[in-house]
Image (tube, rainbow, N blue to C red; front, side, top):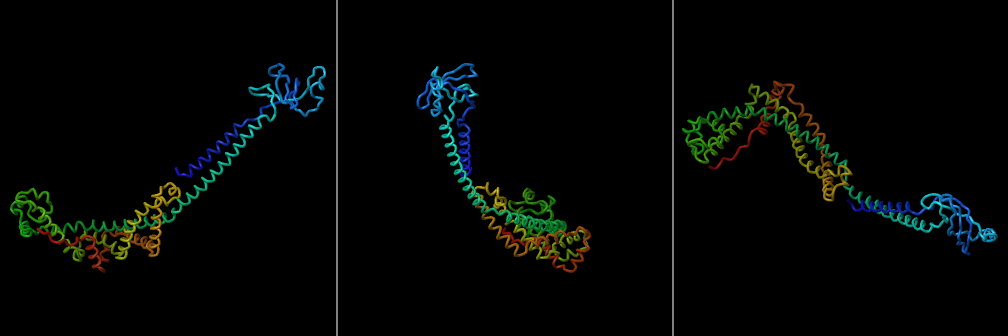
Length: 405
């Protein structure tokens, strides 16, 4: 618990003790006035008296403090010459265990005053302690809240949502292209690899396997080699250690070359339902253009930046969270808020938020309303190079260096 909370707690404890002292201070009991017969009296008023106790139903005798300044006629023989008794009035307790006893008003005042003084002193001390705790705690809270900036965090979260939505929309558009391209890619690979025999592969890889044995195992073409894969090839008869890896690597290079050669304008001009699907998927990204794709890339980069910063700035999103955070979390949150503020200023200056929103809208206008791809094919006819270039950029593998065998 923070230090100043302990101070406030101590002040409340002292205040409670002061109330306890006040509540337990001695008080005068309930009394009523009675007649006293003064049997003897000293000059200071100390006297021996008798009085009628209605509770015990007897006449009692005891010591009492008479009024020394009462009329002389009420004193001693002057009041009753026959008995030599004087007269006075006193107070008798009417409740509690002392019922029927005499009580001198003010006899407990000193003790009560002492208790009241102690209670007052404790109240004053508690107020001082509470003021120190409240003021110190307030100053400490203000310091802890100095880095809280809910507005910055909220704005950054909204920006992350917009950028993340655009990044997802762009990723879905790219995935749609690759899904539509896959059957065409596989067709190009199969056509090319079916024309390459294992004997030709033997010359291309400097041997290491028996082509006749592979044929007997129904592995006759490069396509068969690719379908079998390295684990199966390595277990076939006539295949030396390491040859299966070289063989599959060579076939993969042939497949990539076939894709690079076949993925172009001529392929996209074919009258094929699979090409129509591909043109539809490509048209979405062609429509947003290189600028839109650059905006989507910047949105992806921004999401990657905002994620860790928002995680560190989480305590600064709410003042109560900032108060509960420890020193390390508050320091990290303040630093993250500063970075977020600068990042938001840069994004606002570039107008990126509007660009994100517009590009996301453009990406959502997909080809669902034109499954036959007529509009996409017409658009392809006006800018075929853009379609071919985009297909190469998204789906065609980069040339790999020749392996050293």
